[in-house]
Image (cartoon, rainbow, N blue to C red; front, side, top):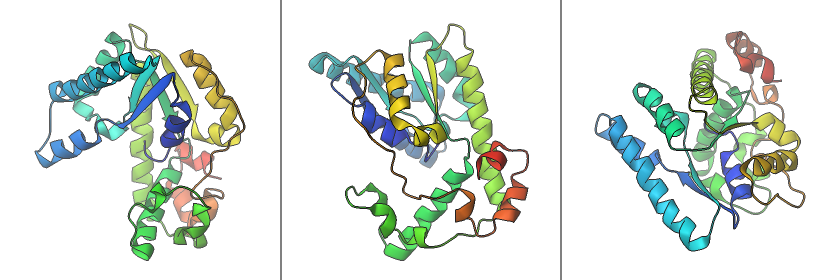
Length: 243
């Protein structure tokens, strides 16, 4: 799901041995919604065409692994079982990025909208260099969340996460499946990149590094009406993971 560290993982994995593309279904998903939906066959064609393009690059560069990013919402609920079958039958490896406190993803999206209103820069987060976190207006204030909307977002993410985890992790034929938790990645990024590269069988990452957060600080400290939001999240993983 959004804001779970996938861009950083992609950056660290891309190397002579690995090439990971961007969100392969994003434009297709947007176009399909504009046309009132697409079927599984259309989605499958995009996935296989994208793999075909990457295979050509793999042959030219002698890359060992190729891949791309997919967001939960880019696979429509009606076609997720067929997607899981396709993954199982095509020898695709799944690296599932999970953020236990998915409410933080919701916070980041609200802060992104706030920064746009304050700065007029829609893609301010795409900049590199300097200490971007200090420049963002949203990091100088707390935000009010609508508790019911926060709960709806978290329920959606946790439901999708559970479906993809169970339908892929326990598939027959077996799917090569690896989970990375954003919160663990923050604590020891080098260790988890090393573990992922070992799992893939590629050259291990060397050198110290950190995962710089656009919105530093604890989860609850960013929410002005945290007590009300926390009560709305009761029974979710975010209720415990957002500290």
